[in-house]
Image 1 (cartoon, rainbow, N blue to C red):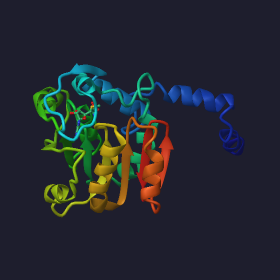
Image 2 (image 1 turned 90 degrees about the horizontal axis):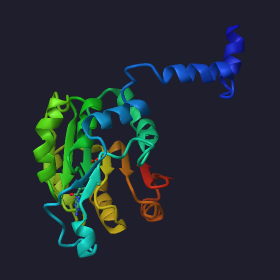
Image 3 (image 1 turned 180 degrees about the vertical axis):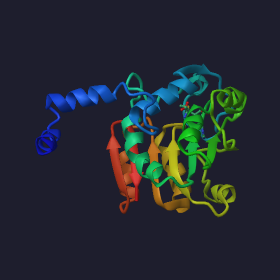
Length: 243
Ligand SMILES: C[S@@+](CC[C@H](N)C(=O)[O-])C[C@H]1O[C@@H](n2cnc3c(N)ncnc32)[C@H](O)[C@@H]1O
């Protein structure tokens, strides 16, 4: 019987396997870091948020005045109704969750801090850096996020950061002796800014790291060409880099 089951488990067309996976889809609470957990936790902290005001823009930002003034949205990375990145985050964060060690994580482009709140639950006691040209929205929202359960162990460190600049030494001064294990770029989404941020972060990456680049489906070849020794994977609008 057990042998039969083992054989059957290899086929996802098997009705038993399909029934088991349907059942686990309703198990509550979902496993931390799983796709369902990521979707649910983002909804808890943010709901997809739109029309968030802008308080600062980079002098180097080449977008048109109208584009720069366009109100921003966030809290929309996980669910398949929006960007649908939960499977990639679940897959690439799993080794860090399993290792159950403190990590240093930086999110670039934090808006109201929804992402930082998710990461604080997933990596408690870790060092969380929120980097953004405009910290007003996140600062205003921290109390609301805390009330929903975020940042139980420590508040995130918020630093003003312009993605268009060379931030290598700035990051060094922020990190001190730490190295970055996890980086999420959800900022301007322009190739130029993404590549400048990656170049600034590269010397500070830990031996074991994952670097996510969201909402850009064309920067991937440049990243691959500039960092040939790394694994660079493209998933549509998401690029994921590992050593
Ligand atoms: C899409 S929102 C981030 C959404 C957020 N990660 C979330 O999950 O809700 C983009 C963010 O990029 C920031 N940003 C815009 N220009 C920037 C720049 N030059 N450097 C760094 N951040 C910038 C904006 O202030 C905004 O907070």
